[in-house]
Length: 82
Image 1 (cartoon, rainbow, N blue to C red):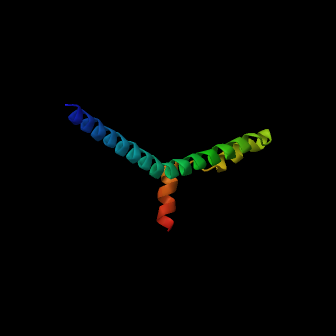
Image 2: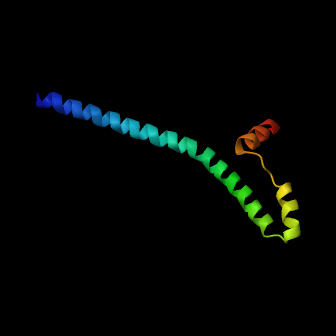
Image 3: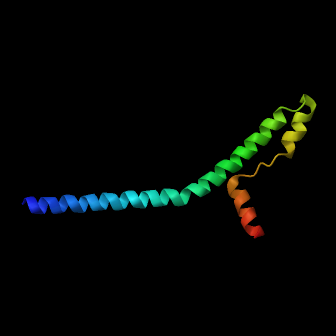
């Protein structure tokens, strides 16, 4: 009985290790996309902040010139250019 129990534990341990490795691999593959989107949104936020630091009369014109595209729209447009 103990031998069977140990074999079951070993099998479960291998399954957990495989799932953990698979999860890490999936995360590693998704991170670059998340990083690009975070960078894009950060740049948009930074540009808006710079507009808000302009003189009161220039703020609105600066805000109107900003890129308002979502990252998904930007990525689709960028992919079409290649």
